[in-house]
Length: 342
Image 1 (tube, one colour):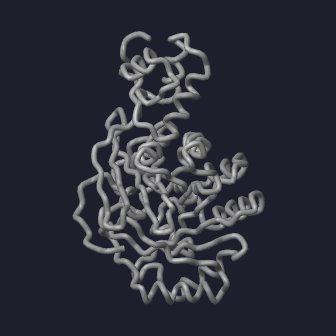
Image 2 (tube, rainbow, N blue to C red; image 1 turned 90 degrees about the horizontal axis):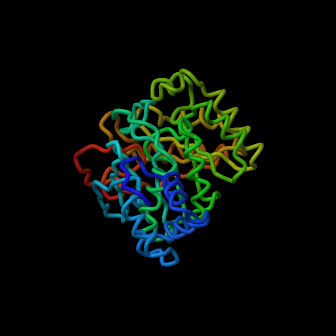
Image 3 (cartoon, rainbow, N blue to C red; image 1 turned 45 degrees about the vertical axis):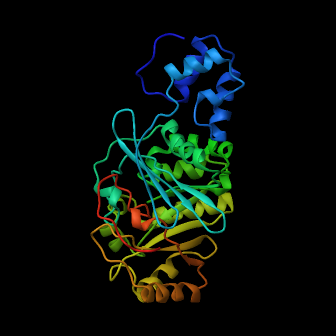
């Protein structure tokens, strides 16, 4: 098959190498089927000729990502730090729940260019978009640990800024064990990508909106993207998704002490969102250094207003806070440990 390559490896490169070796077209599918089952390398792919397996070991690294570190939280959450072939950091998370769910939080970019003030990822240097193979390799890493059944694109990056690779990866997740109905793509409201997603995606992939404020004024302070794409335009696109897909949009709302957690702000949120179109996830703030988190009492009072308005709302169960693996904490940088049970 020729000399070993130093090019970035991915599924395209695998196909190129197989064709160059004169292998039949179905070989690439065989390799993918084995990888999706959670095998740890080419040597386990017993329906491939031994010579081909040896050549693949030499020429096509089994993953586009190198593992550089891993941490385990007291609640069973696992956070893995990867490096891309050109040195960019990427973090992804496996979340284990008592009901048996195994959910993975995937990154679509190394860093994020949109600089939301409450998010640690937004404060790190932006690297680049990830390829579909680099996204899939995050999922495959955790699949090699154990079966997984849910995925959220809520890790590093804004998925709608890298939509095509995100969708390419999402469409292959069912092979790993994660159906489209159990896959959620989150956005801060990057309108060009969101419009393409609503227009073009027929698969039943769920949509989540990272909202965090009930007014344009406050949202623009917290999330600079709102200056460019204000609430009315973003919510209209979300409502179009609901109309076309007949599925509610999840609204993520991080609770910041004294910033967005007052009862009058809950009333404004209830007035803003149609209960037939949206379901709110209230997220206890995971410390990143800039804000304080809302008290349990404030969160309960906020939720009570939404409940009274019949706007569906839940308080998210935080996972992995003690290893900085929870929502908004991924930063691929050393940080002090938070000794908190979640």
